[in-house]
Image (tube, rainbow, N blue to C red; front, side):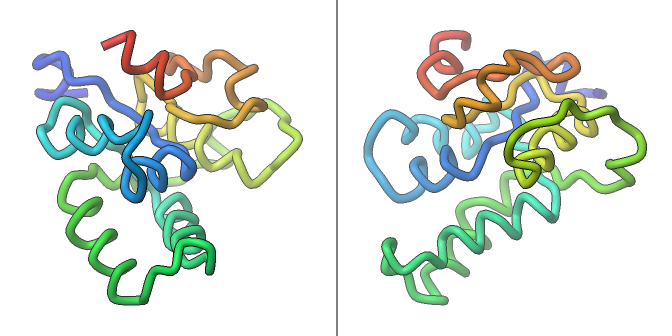
Length: 145
């Protein structure tokens, strides 16, 4: 984990619901943007997770233009992340979950040796842990810091 671990900066995977809430709404998740912008957490990201962020931010209910989405991705997320690359699926044993699309978050937690996976997804929360990563709600994550 290198220098970041020595500085006690937790490695964190953020589920889409958490990122969208943190970026678009003033509420329970808004503190998380300050954590990643101030390097108090190391925000880990994979291409499949980024693709999902973009897809969800494009939902009509958020009324975001392409320029708005581009700004959020390029100015509010990408400058602050550590992009994980490498082979995932065959390296890690992922528990079966009801929504296989959520496996990308579990894979990223294992690939990045994350300390936390922060989510509002009850299926993921019920796992409680993947590898060394605790799976927590945003409120529980805040309390753990």
